[in-house]
Amino acid sequence: MNAFSLRDGQLHVEALPLTEIAAQYGTPCYVYSRRAITEAWREFAQACAGRQVLICYALKANSNLAIIDLLAREQAGFDIVSAGELRRVIAAGGSASRIVFSGVGKSTQELREALLAGVRCFNVESGAELERLNRVAGEVGRRAPVSLRVNPDVDAGTHPYISTGLRENKFGISHDEALETYRRAASLPNLEVVGIDCHIGSQITSLAPFTAALDKVLELVDRLHEQGISLHHIDLGGGLGIRYDDEEPPSRAALIHAVFERLDAHPRAAQYEALFEFGRSIVGNAGALITRVEYLKQNGERHFAIVDAGMNDLMRPALYEAWHAVQPVTPRAGPPTQFDIVGPVCESGDWLARNRTLCLAEGDLLAVMSAGAYGMAMSSNYNTRPRPPEVLVDGSRAHLIRERETIESLFALERRLPD
Ligand SMILES: *Cc1c(COP(=O)(O)O)cnc(C)c1O
Image 1 (cartoon, rainbow, N blue to C red):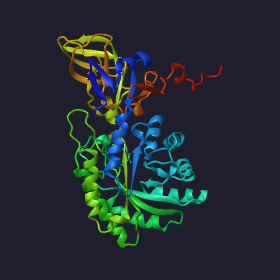
Image 2: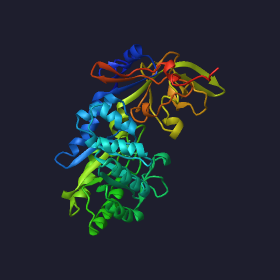
Image 3: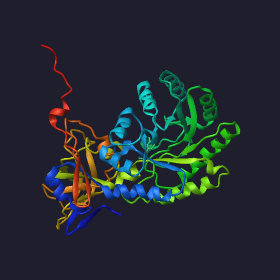
Image 4: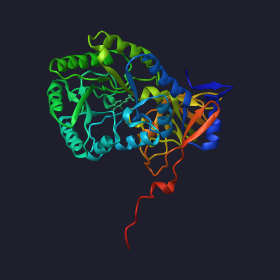
């Protein structure tokens, strides 16, 4: 299902024309389809039906409270990477008992807060974190459920900045050191070893890296079993890619089936609960950034469409040279021109799309597609630009789920010098 479609010459999200959203909320503006998010989620959930599974939503892809709320109502678990994300889940009505806490640099205060909240599991990324967690758990009188994030040394075949499962990445504990670290974890009084975890990267578009990582994880699970360390769950992380351009990632169901085909062949399969941590795949294609053309200009041979959204609103092109489709909201007939779609920010890296053949005029609305994941979540106030509002559309109804920031709020925490 594509939530965005052209009807009567107008780009719609579900049943609502994007022109109406722009008229009501202004531009730039993030817009999401409730149905697209729910359907993506249910595709995972249905592929897992009847099994012992916790599918977590990785909040960092898009952490708006309404989206957390929507997924909490679907019985999602949540993968968090900070105390801030923990508080978002609680504020949105999610349950700490369905939260896994990932990340390489959890602070003492974050560990304490998550212990007191009663999170489901800490995905521990180093021996040093293990020792600290044991100490903090002792201080607060709780036993910390832990899983070690192992680095299976597989190449996810994705952009280097979003590849996390190689030996040289900062993430996880190397395969070679994992056994030793597990023995240490099992010996610490305030820890309870409950699982194993890996996450090899993001925007992965083939099954092979997932199954290769699972094989490596299962091999470790067996060696731990031989040593008397038995686990309750196996967490395979997230990372399933989406279609931005012409990628052909496996379907959500195909990934789940491939994982269970392998898991089911394991002699103790029935003993393990499977966990997943998907972000991009759930929200990526469900969102777009609506922006208006401010100016058209030509420098030498190059044509630029200067729009009112910039790299501060959608950072992925500047950060990863990521490709996003750009669709006119009301396509016009006429001779096309090759445009670079650029923002107003004072950086040459401030572009949203390059070499797009479009017919444009000043004032036209454009939709930057597939912006539901790592869009608003990575936005900033660079150039003292207020962040855009977020609107969640449900059929023909629009819900404002985050207001546009005011300029005053951007420096409200700042102080002038004393006289
Ligand atoms: C970012 C992240 C995810 C989600 O990745 P997606 O590519 O958005 O599915 C899952 N687990 C961990 C540990 C992460 O850091």
